[in-house]
Length: 339
Image 1 (cartoon, helix red, strand yellow):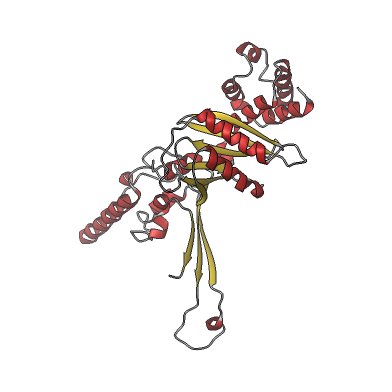
Image 2 (cartoon, rainbow, N blue to C red):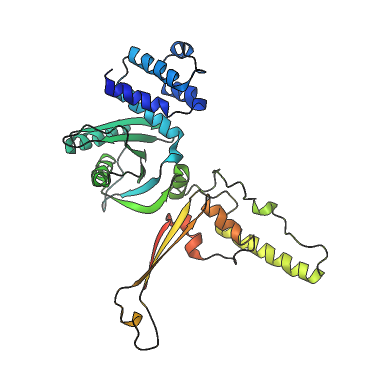
């Protein structure tokens, strides 16, 4: 094992939290149980990393083994990355082909290798017929940078792929081409949908809302909320208040459902409109360029926050369709223009 691979192992193991070290190493399944038992996991982390790297050297670990360990670490810490969604489509009249995962991997790798001499591609199969792909990019003259890889999660026989946002924007066309050809699709487009929560993105594009997501601690299920009525209030006011609360709850449930929402951190709206006025003249009236405005809603759990606005009395029910359509449209980036 050369120094480059050894250093890659050292850095990868170093970033694994001590509380997860044993779990990740066992999932990796490269070091035997007996070898792991010889390691003192209570020593200082630098010493622990050095001992583990020595065991990897004894087992003649390769760059491929190190890349696999990095994939496993990333799977455990997928929320540390921002994920984009790409949607592929078949050509007119094209039939759905039988899918072979090994053929997909081989084709994907060949396309990248043919176009770029220095690139490292690694795979790891996951649940639900998904494959995680790790790509370390190089150039025609530089070896792949193992410390700034791109990740792709592709679900077989679906038109969707999820990619970690990369600083190497110039490689996106090549990545899209490899995905499209290897999965036997005709074209690929980037959706206006992005989040750190990969499972929530998957639920949105696959329409799997009725499942459990990470929920914001301050959110209480609607049916468990107290109406918050003052017992000393006039009974007629109480009656009207109760009817309105029930209406708000019903409308909210019709729009959002009675299940936890997929987790997104923001929604962004770009408005472009021409200035309109009944008055003649003025600087803005002569302006040909449209007026532009950007509005961004942010929250640790945006959809649950929106769901709670009307029941909390902060907003009227129903909310604007521009806010409630996010899961159905599969978008959290919007452009609003004049018709």
